[in-house]
Image 1 (cartoon, helix red, strand yellow):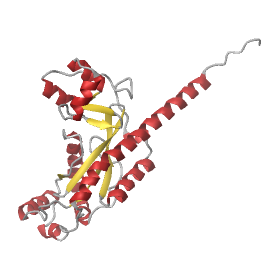
Image 2 (cartoon, helix red, strand yellow):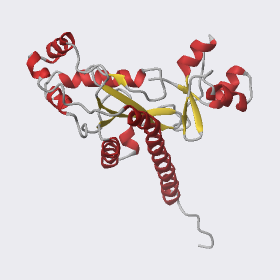
Image 3 (tube, one colour):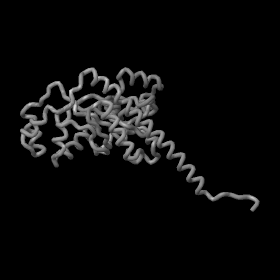
Image 4 (cartoon, one colour):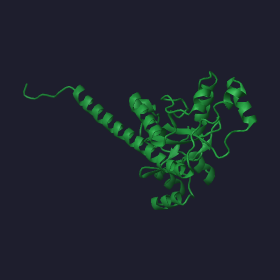
Length: 258
């Protein structure tokens, strides 16, 4: 999983002040993503760009440096609600995964093309592999890119501290060069073990989304990810307070005058 640097980490590497880091991130000289009011920078891309090794500080989320699973921070019902919100908001298919591409929810509002393919036993692992590759793509800002099924998908992250712990995916969007070529359909049919005709029968069942709406989707998707990140932060603070209260209650009470 990609490690991310804080603004302070990049300051230390470049020996510049914080405002300079912000300017370089704003104008694209530094690869990064803005989550809420904070910038986070992919360590591997910073290392390649600067030609130096990077040693980030441990995540502030966990002093041991290990990160919890997204469903350790939000319960299953909350994650499912987030997925349903994505599907309702954008009118396309949506799923939330961990950073290894494993789905944490069912795919909500799947297009007919996806539904027909996902019913095949071989399709599940192909989708997980694809979602894992989305998590590792260097572009931080969401963009619609072709999936292994041919239609377009986009993703954003949910963060804990300075590390992504989950991925919000939307997809099933019809690309400009749809329908796919006979060679693509034949290769996909072979990969999942069905006849070409089975793919051809559902190839028109994707989501036609106008270009302007796609731009709006890409603009607002990080805001949804930011909202989930804020929920994670609030949950973390609440759990921390409850743990502190529990520690106090477990301590033996000191009584004087007994």
